[in-house]
Image 1 (spheres, rainbow, N blue to C red):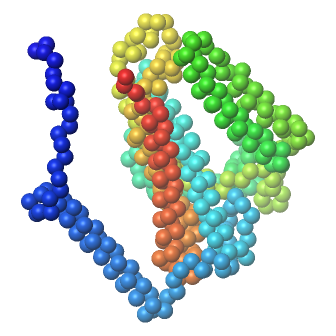
Image 2: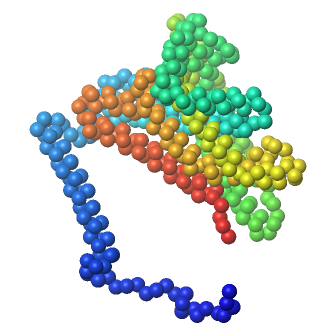
Image 3: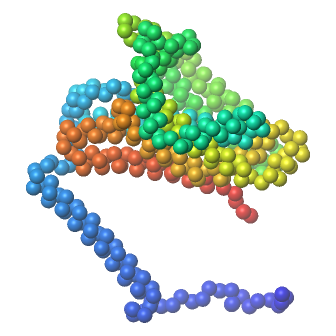
Amino acid sequence: MSQTTMDPRLLRAPPKRKLRLSWADERVRGIVWQVLVVGVVGAIAYWLWSNTVHNLEVRRIATGFGFLDREAGLPIGESLIPYSPTDTYLRALTVGLLNTLKVAVVGIVLATVLGTLVGIARLSRNWLLSKIAGVYVEVIRDLPLLLQLLFWYAILQALPGPRQSLNPVEGVFLSNRGLKLPWLEWQDAHTYALLAFVAGAVGTWLWARRATALFLQDGKPRPVWPAALGLLVGLPLAVWAAFGAPWTVDWPALRGFNFRGGLTMTPEYFALLLGLVLYTAGFIAEIVRAGILAVPKGQWEAAQALGLRPGAVLKRIVLPQALRVIIPPMTSQYLNITKNSSLAVAIGYQDIVSIANTTLNQTGQAIEGIAIIMLVYLTISLSISLFMNWYNARIALVER
């Protein structure tokens, strides 16, 4: 290679050509074709919209979202917020949205935990554990999700009644009315303690970032755990104690033909959650297994040469590197578990799809009802994608 110094003028970008209003200029052709495509798409969209409006007017079908302020008269079995049939359609749809989020959020957390454990178990040196995890993954992924939901719902419906309910642990009852669990009587002190915990988590995260930045500057490590202990444990406990430290457990008890008190998981919700978690965990397990196998074998060998135990190697060295492979396909599974929750209508769980379908059947506002369903799932899916893309960018390797 020549050692002569290259002329700096040769490193400059070539001058841009002036745009000529001629069909021979490829940039002009590109602009014209793009304008034509946008115009055609816009014309088709306008024709579809005008044709829909015309047909609705001919058939005297009302349009708009004014029906949301009308009384729903729709009974809903379970809701996170107070609701009665005399409330409006808007509140009924809000209840359906919260029911969907209750399934999606809890399902994502449980499926992630179970799928990670099964994926690690597939790589275990224990032959029996590895084979059991492999059979679970192969069987659960080959059965349609709808069939699994109907299977679990049928099993729950076949359970004995409340008087003969299964009682595996004190205060826990399983019957055809669902799962009953002891629950804390929620008061204002618990709400304030929860807000203090969230604020403590934010403070712990900020201090961890600050400690890392200071360590990079002067090389002196700053422990994070004292601040985490004070902010995540001490602060909520102090707030809870300041408001009287209430601690009353609501235990379920049989009263007549049903249970009273405690936390109730209806058969519909329990079957839906169980089916979604078990089904999605099978796919997450394979994603986790593939991510771990993608880490070079030399990383394992180097960590073992340092005398680290297998658990520490997996936790501190392998999984942090495997996350860069795991996160992108994991995002798809989170989106799937959210969208698959719409199958709840098959087993009678009243989510946003079920309530919106009932609403459009009562009001005749089919377009508006379907638009609400689409908007809800689009918003949830985009929110999950944005968060996962942000997290994926944070853990990505930065080349120097």
